[in-house]
Image (cartoon, rainbow, N blue to C red; front, side, top):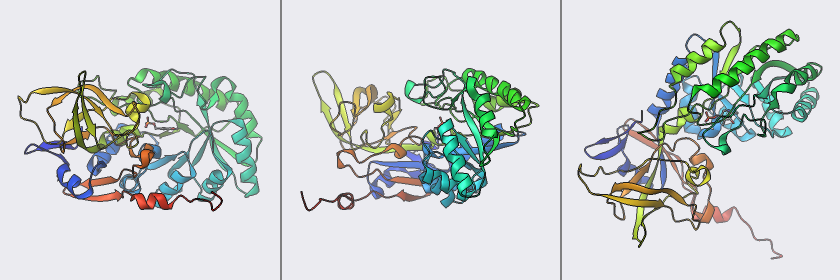
Length: 421
Ligand SMILES: *Cc1c(COP(=O)(O)O)cnc(C)c1O
Protein backbone atom coordinates (compact mmCIF):
# COMPACT_ATOMS: atom_id res chain seq x y z
CA UNK A 1 0.00 0.00 0.00
CA UNK A 2 1.11 3.53 -0.73
CA UNK A 3 0.55 6.51 1.55
CA UNK A 4 -0.08 8.53 -1.60
CA UNK A 5 -3.79 9.06 -2.08
CA UNK A 6 -6.35 11.62 -3.17
CA UNK A 7 -8.16 14.02 -0.89
CA UNK A 8 -10.68 16.42 -2.43
CA UNK A 9 -9.27 15.53 -5.83
CA UNK A 10 -5.66 16.36 -4.91
CA UNK A 11 -2.91 13.81 -4.37
CA UNK A 12 -1.37 13.85 -0.95
CA UNK A 13 1.62 12.22 0.67
CA UNK A 14 0.12 11.24 4.02
CA UNK A 15 -1.70 14.47 5.00
CA UNK A 16 0.42 16.82 2.94
CA UNK A 17 -0.57 18.12 -0.48
CA UNK A 18 1.91 17.46 -3.26
CA UNK A 19 0.86 20.73 -4.89
CA UNK A 20 1.91 22.58 -1.73
CA UNK A 21 5.30 20.85 -1.76
CA UNK A 22 5.77 21.67 -5.46
CA UNK A 23 4.90 25.33 -4.81
CA UNK A 24 7.38 25.50 -1.94
CA UNK A 25 10.33 23.38 -3.11
CA UNK A 26 9.88 23.46 -6.87
CA UNK A 27 9.95 20.50 -9.23
CA UNK A 28 11.28 17.99 -9.93
CA UNK A 29 11.67 16.63 -6.41
CA UNK A 30 11.36 13.32 -4.64
CA UNK A 31 8.69 13.09 -1.94
CA UNK A 32 8.91 10.30 0.64
CA UNK A 33 6.40 9.14 3.21
CA UNK A 34 7.91 8.41 6.63
CA UNK A 35 4.86 6.33 7.59
CA UNK A 36 5.41 4.08 4.58
CA UNK A 37 9.06 3.39 5.45
CA UNK A 38 7.94 2.61 8.97
CA UNK A 39 5.13 0.35 7.88
CA UNK A 40 7.28 -1.58 5.41
CA UNK A 41 9.95 -2.09 8.06
CA UNK A 42 7.36 -3.33 10.57
CA UNK A 43 5.72 -5.67 8.06
CA UNK A 44 9.11 -7.18 7.33
CA UNK A 45 10.08 -7.41 11.01
CA UNK A 46 6.72 -9.03 11.83
CA UNK A 47 7.29 -11.58 9.09
CA UNK A 48 10.48 -12.66 10.88
CA UNK A 49 8.82 -12.98 14.24
CA UNK A 50 10.27 -15.84 16.26
CA UNK A 51 13.51 -16.02 14.29
CA UNK A 52 16.87 -14.90 15.64
CA UNK A 53 17.38 -12.22 13.01
CA UNK A 54 19.00 -8.93 12.03
CA UNK A 55 17.39 -6.69 9.43
CA UNK A 56 20.24 -4.90 7.70
CA UNK A 57 18.51 -2.41 5.39
CA UNK A 58 20.32 -2.15 2.07
CA UNK A 59 21.47 1.46 2.27
CA UNK A 60 22.06 1.75 -1.46
CA UNK A 61 18.31 1.63 -2.18
CA UNK A 62 17.79 5.02 -0.54
CA UNK A 63 20.62 6.41 1.54
CA UNK A 64 19.31 9.83 2.54
CA UNK A 65 20.29 10.51 6.18
CA UNK A 66 16.73 11.39 7.19
CA UNK A 67 15.42 8.13 5.74
CA UNK A 68 18.17 6.18 7.48
CA UNK A 69 17.34 7.92 10.76
CA UNK A 70 13.67 6.91 10.46
CA UNK A 71 14.78 3.29 10.07
CA UNK A 72 17.50 3.50 12.74
CA UNK A 73 14.93 4.63 15.29
CA UNK A 74 12.94 1.48 14.56
CA UNK A 75 15.98 -0.64 15.42
CA UNK A 76 17.01 -1.37 11.86
CA UNK A 77 20.59 -2.31 10.94
CA UNK A 78 22.40 -1.59 7.68
CA UNK A 79 23.97 -3.40 4.75
CA UNK A 80 26.53 -1.05 3.23
CA UNK A 81 28.53 -1.38 0.02
CA UNK A 82 31.00 1.49 0.40
CA UNK A 83 32.88 3.51 2.98
CA UNK A 84 30.52 6.39 2.26
CA UNK A 85 27.47 4.30 3.09
CA UNK A 86 29.23 3.07 6.24
CA UNK A 87 29.68 6.69 7.37
CA UNK A 88 26.02 7.41 6.63
CA UNK A 89 24.85 4.44 8.71
CA UNK A 90 27.10 5.41 11.63
CA UNK A 91 26.11 9.08 11.34
CA UNK A 92 22.43 8.31 11.95
CA UNK A 93 23.24 6.16 14.97
CA UNK A 94 22.97 2.64 13.60
CA UNK A 95 25.18 0.59 15.96
CA UNK A 96 28.27 -0.87 14.28
CA UNK A 97 27.19 -4.29 15.54
CA UNK A 98 24.14 -4.03 13.26
CA UNK A 99 26.19 -3.22 10.14
CA UNK A 100 27.33 -5.69 7.48
CA UNK A 101 29.61 -4.70 4.62
CA UNK A 102 29.01 -6.19 1.16
CA UNK A 103 30.49 -5.49 -2.26
CA UNK A 104 33.06 -6.94 -4.67
CA UNK A 105 35.53 -4.07 -4.56
CA UNK A 106 36.14 -2.93 -1.00
CA UNK A 107 39.23 -0.71 -0.82
CA UNK A 108 41.73 -0.94 2.03
CA UNK A 109 40.63 2.48 3.32
CA UNK A 110 37.02 1.26 3.42
CA UNK A 111 37.94 -1.99 5.18
CA UNK A 112 40.08 -0.10 7.68
CA UNK A 113 37.19 2.26 8.52
CA UNK A 114 34.87 -0.72 8.99
CA UNK A 115 37.37 -2.51 11.25
CA UNK A 116 37.86 0.64 13.32
CA UNK A 117 34.10 1.05 13.66
CA UNK A 118 33.76 -2.59 14.74
CA UNK A 119 31.12 -3.72 12.25
CA UNK A 120 29.28 -6.99 12.69
CA UNK A 121 30.37 -8.77 9.52
CA UNK A 122 32.31 -8.45 6.29
CA UNK A 123 30.63 -10.27 3.43
CA UNK A 124 33.75 -11.30 1.52
CA UNK A 125 33.36 -11.84 -2.20
CA UNK A 126 36.76 -13.19 -3.32
CA UNK A 127 39.99 -14.76 -2.06
CA UNK A 128 42.14 -11.72 -2.95
CA UNK A 129 39.73 -9.60 -0.88
CA UNK A 130 40.12 -12.08 1.99
CA UNK A 131 43.92 -11.79 1.83
CA UNK A 132 43.77 -8.00 1.82
CA UNK A 133 41.38 -7.95 4.78
CA UNK A 134 43.52 -10.42 6.71
CA UNK A 135 46.68 -8.36 6.20
CA UNK A 136 44.93 -5.16 7.19
CA UNK A 137 43.43 -6.71 10.32
CA UNK A 138 46.81 -8.17 11.39
CA UNK A 139 48.38 -4.78 10.79
CA UNK A 140 45.79 -3.17 13.06
CA UNK A 141 46.02 -5.93 15.67
CA UNK A 142 42.41 -6.89 15.03
CA UNK A 143 40.39 -9.84 13.82
CA UNK A 144 37.83 -9.37 11.03
CA UNK A 145 34.54 -11.29 11.36
CA UNK A 146 33.58 -12.65 7.94
CA UNK A 147 31.09 -14.58 5.91
CA UNK A 148 31.80 -15.59 2.34
CA UNK A 149 29.24 -14.45 -0.16
CA UNK A 150 28.35 -17.64 -1.96
CA UNK A 151 27.19 -17.59 -5.55
CA UNK A 152 24.62 -20.41 -5.67
CA UNK A 153 24.28 -20.30 -9.48
CA UNK A 154 20.56 -19.51 -9.48
CA UNK A 155 18.63 -17.53 -12.08
CA UNK A 156 16.83 -14.69 -10.32
CA UNK A 157 15.96 -11.05 -10.65
CA UNK A 158 13.56 -9.25 -12.92
CA UNK A 159 16.26 -8.01 -15.29
CA UNK A 160 19.70 -9.22 -16.39
CA UNK A 161 21.27 -6.06 -14.95
CA UNK A 162 19.95 -6.80 -11.46
CA UNK A 163 20.48 -10.56 -11.44
CA UNK A 164 23.49 -11.41 -9.29
CA UNK A 165 23.37 -15.08 -8.38
CA UNK A 166 24.38 -16.80 -11.62
CA UNK A 167 27.83 -18.35 -11.96
CA UNK A 168 28.71 -15.86 -14.72
CA UNK A 169 27.96 -12.81 -12.52
CA UNK A 170 30.83 -10.97 -10.84
CA UNK A 171 29.40 -11.55 -7.36
CA UNK A 172 30.48 -13.98 -4.67
CA UNK A 173 32.44 -17.21 -4.55
CA UNK A 174 31.47 -20.22 -6.63
CA UNK A 175 29.53 -22.59 -4.39
CA UNK A 176 31.67 -25.51 -5.56
CA UNK A 177 34.89 -23.99 -4.24
CA UNK A 178 33.33 -22.68 -1.01
CA UNK A 179 34.68 -25.49 1.24
CA UNK A 180 38.21 -24.76 -0.01
CA UNK A 181 37.77 -21.03 0.58
CA UNK A 182 36.62 -21.66 4.16
CA UNK A 183 39.51 -24.06 4.78
CA UNK A 184 41.90 -21.37 3.61
CA UNK A 185 40.27 -18.64 5.74
CA UNK A 186 40.57 -20.91 8.78
CA UNK A 187 44.35 -20.55 8.58
CA UNK A 188 44.38 -16.76 8.59
CA UNK A 189 44.80 -15.29 12.06
CA UNK A 190 43.37 -11.89 11.08
CA UNK A 191 40.11 -13.56 10.05
CA UNK A 192 37.30 -15.03 12.13
CA UNK A 193 34.82 -17.13 10.17
CA UNK A 194 31.34 -16.51 11.51
CA UNK A 195 28.90 -17.25 8.73
CA UNK A 196 27.77 -17.55 5.17
CA UNK A 197 26.05 -15.08 2.85
CA UNK A 198 24.15 -14.80 -0.41
CA UNK A 199 22.30 -12.18 -2.42
CA UNK A 200 20.87 -13.51 -5.67
CA UNK A 201 19.27 -10.48 -7.30
CA UNK A 202 16.64 -7.81 -7.07
CA UNK A 203 12.95 -7.37 -7.88
CA UNK A 204 12.48 -11.13 -7.51
CA UNK A 205 8.77 -11.87 -7.95
CA UNK A 206 8.46 -15.45 -6.73
CA UNK A 207 9.71 -17.54 -3.83
CA UNK A 208 11.17 -20.29 -6.03
CA UNK A 209 14.64 -18.78 -6.65
CA UNK A 210 15.02 -17.85 -2.97
CA UNK A 211 14.05 -21.36 -2.02
CA UNK A 212 16.41 -23.00 -4.50
CA UNK A 213 19.33 -20.84 -3.39
CA UNK A 214 18.58 -21.19 0.31
CA UNK A 215 18.41 -24.95 0.11
CA UNK A 216 21.90 -24.98 -1.43
CA UNK A 217 23.17 -22.72 1.35
CA UNK A 218 21.58 -24.77 4.12
CA UNK A 219 23.34 -27.87 2.76
CA UNK A 220 26.59 -25.91 2.63
CA UNK A 221 26.21 -24.80 6.27
CA UNK A 222 26.04 -28.47 7.24
CA UNK A 223 29.07 -29.37 5.11
CA UNK A 224 31.11 -26.50 6.55
CA UNK A 225 30.20 -27.44 10.11
CA UNK A 226 31.21 -31.02 9.38
CA UNK A 227 34.54 -29.62 8.20
CA UNK A 228 34.92 -28.04 11.63
CA UNK A 229 33.95 -24.43 10.89
CA UNK A 230 31.84 -22.25 13.13
CA UNK A 231 28.85 -21.04 11.10
CA UNK A 232 26.69 -18.87 13.35
CA UNK A 233 25.18 -16.48 10.79
CA UNK A 234 23.26 -17.05 7.58
CA UNK A 235 22.80 -13.87 5.54
CA UNK A 236 20.08 -14.43 2.94
CA UNK A 237 20.52 -11.03 1.23
CA UNK A 238 17.72 -8.91 -0.14
CA UNK A 239 15.88 -8.97 -3.42
CA UNK A 240 12.21 -9.35 -2.55
CA UNK A 241 10.23 -7.63 -5.32
CA UNK A 242 7.51 -5.00 -4.98
CA UNK A 243 4.43 -4.23 -7.09
CA UNK A 244 5.27 -1.48 -9.61
CA UNK A 245 1.80 -1.45 -11.14
CA UNK A 246 -1.65 -1.83 -9.76
CA UNK A 247 -2.73 -4.59 -12.12
CA UNK A 248 0.38 -6.72 -11.76
CA UNK A 249 0.76 -10.15 -10.19
CA UNK A 250 2.06 -9.04 -6.84
CA UNK A 251 5.38 -10.47 -5.65
CA UNK A 252 5.14 -12.75 -2.61
CA UNK A 253 4.15 -11.03 0.62
CA UNK A 254 6.87 -10.66 3.24
CA UNK A 255 4.92 -13.00 5.54
CA UNK A 256 5.18 -15.83 3.01
CA UNK A 257 8.84 -15.07 2.43
CA UNK A 258 9.48 -15.10 6.18
CA UNK A 259 7.63 -18.37 6.58
CA UNK A 260 9.62 -19.97 3.79
CA UNK A 261 12.93 -18.91 5.35
CA UNK A 262 11.77 -20.12 8.75
CA UNK A 263 10.85 -23.55 7.40
CA UNK A 264 14.01 -23.92 5.34
CA UNK A 265 16.26 -23.04 8.28
CA UNK A 266 14.38 -24.89 10.99
CA UNK A 267 16.72 -26.46 13.54
CA UNK A 268 19.79 -24.99 11.84
CA UNK A 269 20.53 -22.76 14.84
CA UNK A 270 21.85 -19.73 12.98
CA UNK A 271 21.28 -16.01 13.30
CA UNK A 272 19.57 -14.91 10.09
CA UNK A 273 20.55 -11.65 8.41
CA UNK A 274 18.19 -10.02 5.91
CA UNK A 275 19.15 -7.18 3.56
CA UNK A 276 15.91 -5.74 2.17
CA UNK A 277 16.20 -2.51 0.19
CA UNK A 278 13.52 -2.04 -2.44
CA UNK A 279 10.88 -3.74 -0.29
CA UNK A 280 11.32 -1.04 2.38
CA UNK A 281 11.88 2.02 0.20
CA UNK A 282 10.42 1.46 -3.28
CA UNK A 283 6.81 2.38 -2.69
CA UNK A 284 7.64 4.96 -0.01
CA UNK A 285 8.45 7.65 -2.56
CA UNK A 286 7.28 9.44 -5.69
CA UNK A 287 9.11 11.68 -8.11
CA UNK A 288 7.04 14.84 -8.39
CA UNK A 289 7.30 16.57 -11.74
CA UNK A 290 5.64 19.27 -13.80
CA UNK A 291 4.52 19.13 -17.41
CA UNK A 292 6.61 21.66 -19.35
CA UNK A 293 5.06 21.17 -22.76
CA UNK A 294 2.55 19.02 -24.52
CA UNK A 295 3.91 18.38 -27.98
CA UNK A 296 1.48 17.02 -30.50
CA UNK A 297 3.33 15.23 -33.27
CA UNK A 298 1.96 13.51 -36.37
CA UNK A 299 2.71 10.06 -34.94
CA UNK A 300 2.70 10.64 -31.19
CA UNK A 301 1.79 13.00 -28.39
CA UNK A 302 4.60 13.83 -26.02
CA UNK A 303 4.32 14.98 -22.45
CA UNK A 304 7.60 16.75 -21.80
CA UNK A 305 8.27 16.79 -18.06
CA UNK A 306 10.74 18.81 -16.03
CA UNK A 307 12.06 15.51 -14.58
CA UNK A 308 14.49 13.50 -16.66
CA UNK A 309 16.62 10.37 -16.78
CA UNK A 310 19.27 12.07 -14.66
CA UNK A 311 16.71 12.31 -11.83
CA UNK A 312 15.29 8.79 -12.24
CA UNK A 313 17.28 6.49 -14.47
CA UNK A 314 15.40 3.21 -13.93
CA UNK A 315 13.29 3.39 -17.12
CA UNK A 316 16.32 4.24 -19.26
CA UNK A 317 18.62 1.75 -17.53
CA UNK A 318 16.38 -1.29 -17.08
CA UNK A 319 13.28 -0.48 -19.11
CA UNK A 320 11.56 -0.27 -15.73
CA UNK A 321 7.85 0.51 -15.45
CA UNK A 322 6.64 3.30 -13.17
CA UNK A 323 2.98 4.23 -12.83
CA UNK A 324 2.52 7.91 -13.66
CA UNK A 325 -0.51 9.77 -12.40
CA UNK A 326 -1.78 13.37 -12.47
CA UNK A 327 -1.62 15.05 -9.06
CA UNK A 328 -4.99 16.70 -9.75
CA UNK A 329 -7.50 13.88 -10.05
CA UNK A 330 -9.28 14.13 -13.43
CA UNK A 331 -13.09 13.86 -13.52
CA UNK A 332 -14.37 10.27 -13.77
CA UNK A 333 -15.27 10.39 -17.47
CA UNK A 334 -12.48 12.65 -18.63
CA UNK A 335 -11.34 11.68 -22.13
CA UNK A 336 -8.02 9.84 -22.27
CA UNK A 337 -5.02 10.68 -24.38
CA UNK A 338 -2.13 8.45 -25.33
CA UNK A 339 1.20 9.98 -24.40
CA UNK A 340 4.87 9.24 -24.58
CA UNK A 341 6.19 10.72 -21.34
CA UNK A 342 9.71 12.09 -21.70
CA UNK A 343 12.25 14.36 -20.04
CA UNK A 344 14.26 17.26 -21.46
CA UNK A 345 17.64 15.48 -21.63
CA UNK A 346 19.18 15.15 -25.08
CA UNK A 347 18.96 11.35 -25.27
CA UNK A 348 16.22 9.25 -26.85
CA UNK A 349 16.56 7.01 -23.80
CA UNK A 350 15.21 9.87 -21.69
CA UNK A 351 11.73 8.36 -21.82
CA UNK A 352 9.73 7.46 -18.72
CA UNK A 353 6.92 5.69 -20.58
CA UNK A 354 5.51 5.18 -24.05
CA UNK A 355 1.89 4.86 -25.07
CA UNK A 356 0.48 5.74 -21.64
CA UNK A 357 -3.21 6.54 -21.41
CA UNK A 358 -3.82 9.52 -19.18
CA UNK A 359 -6.47 12.21 -18.88
CA UNK A 360 -5.63 15.22 -21.02
CA UNK A 361 -2.87 17.23 -19.41
CA UNK A 362 -1.59 20.72 -20.07
CA UNK A 363 1.59 22.66 -19.36
CA UNK A 364 1.95 23.39 -15.66
CA UNK A 365 0.09 20.27 -14.48
CA UNK A 366 1.85 18.11 -11.91
CA UNK A 367 2.37 14.36 -12.20
CA UNK A 368 3.60 11.81 -9.65
CA UNK A 369 5.94 9.08 -10.89
CA UNK A 370 5.20 6.29 -8.45
CA UNK A 371 7.38 3.64 -6.79
CA UNK A 372 10.42 5.89 -6.99
CA UNK A 373 11.62 5.58 -3.38
CA UNK A 374 14.28 2.94 -4.13
CA UNK A 375 17.11 3.29 -6.67
CA UNK A 376 15.76 6.73 -7.60
CA UNK A 377 17.45 9.70 -5.93
CA UNK A 378 20.51 7.58 -5.13
CA UNK A 379 21.23 7.11 -8.84
CA UNK A 380 20.56 10.73 -9.79
CA UNK A 381 23.25 12.71 -11.58
CA UNK A 382 23.77 16.25 -12.84
CA UNK A 383 23.85 15.24 -16.52
CA UNK A 384 23.05 18.19 -18.78
CA UNK A 385 24.05 20.37 -15.77
CA UNK A 386 20.68 19.73 -14.24
CA UNK A 387 21.11 20.34 -10.49
CA UNK A 388 20.88 17.25 -8.31
CA UNK A 389 17.19 16.54 -7.63
CA UNK A 390 16.08 17.49 -4.10
CA UNK A 391 14.34 15.16 -1.63
CA UNK A 392 11.48 15.88 0.76
CA UNK A 393 10.29 13.78 3.69
CA UNK A 394 6.65 13.92 4.77
CA UNK A 395 5.38 12.92 8.18
CA UNK A 396 1.64 13.43 8.50
CA UNK A 397 0.98 17.14 8.00
CA UNK A 398 4.59 18.24 8.18
CA UNK A 399 7.37 17.95 5.68
CA UNK A 400 11.02 18.90 5.41
CA UNK A 401 13.57 19.34 2.68
CA UNK A 402 16.07 16.54 3.36
CA UNK A 403 18.41 17.21 0.42
CA UNK A 404 18.52 20.63 -1.11
CA UNK A 405 18.78 21.43 -4.78
CA UNK A 406 22.22 22.92 -5.44
CA UNK A 407 22.39 26.12 -7.46
CA UNK A 408 24.18 26.06 -10.79
CA UNK A 409 26.74 28.44 -9.25
CA UNK A 410 27.51 25.82 -6.60
CA UNK A 411 27.94 23.17 -9.28
CA UNK A 412 30.31 25.35 -11.33
CA UNK A 413 32.36 26.12 -8.21
CA UNK A 414 33.33 22.44 -7.84
CA UNK A 415 35.21 22.64 -11.13
CA UNK A 416 38.36 24.55 -11.99
CA UNK A 417 40.27 25.57 -15.08
CA UNK A 418 44.07 25.07 -14.85
CA UNK A 419 45.97 28.24 -15.63
CA UNK A 420 47.74 26.45 -18.53
CA UNK A 421 44.48 26.04 -20.44
C1 LIG B 1 21.33 -4.26 -3.58
C2 LIG B 1 21.60 -5.25 -2.53
C3 LIG B 1 20.59 -5.61 -1.62
C4 LIG B 1 19.18 -5.07 -1.69
O1 LIG B 1 18.45 -5.54 -2.77
P1 LIG B 1 16.88 -5.21 -2.88
O2 LIG B 1 16.49 -5.83 -4.15
O3 LIG B 1 16.77 -3.72 -2.91
O4 LIG B 1 16.23 -5.80 -1.70
C5 LIG B 1 20.91 -6.50 -0.62
N1 LIG B 1 22.15 -7.04 -0.51
C6 LIG B 1 23.14 -6.72 -1.38
C7 LIG B 1 24.48 -7.34 -1.22
C8 LIG B 1 22.90 -5.82 -2.42
O5 LIG B 1 23.89 -5.52 -3.27
